[in-house]
Image (cartoon, rainbow, N blue to C red):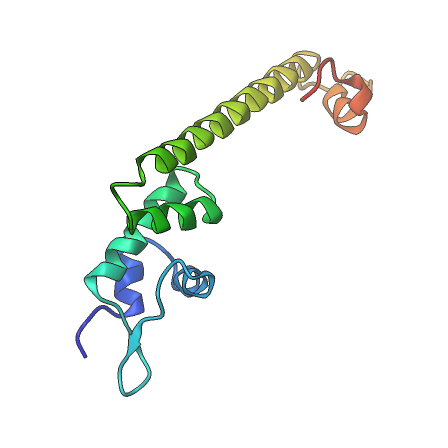
Length: 140
């Protein structure tokens, strides 16, 4: 039986072997054929699927969304609307996260400005702010 070993798939895609097995268990990758010795063997279609999954993960899609996108690949002409919706949902999630990170940044900048990093005999204002959520100026 020809094909790629799980190690070769891992090396080519940058996805860890344990993660590849996890994706198989989740049904994102089909169970591969095996050699007489029981070694997994993957074809080019599995390599392409794993590359798709890896790229989608890099873009921050969760595994449920990736499973939906994979299913949509089976009906590419009917998939445009659903794939577009899934991608737009991801954009909204990213924008929400960026807004949250900006609030976190603003609060940390404010906290750090209260302290010059030198011991002046007073308790550390950074540690005080971290210990007392009430000391925060805004919701983050």
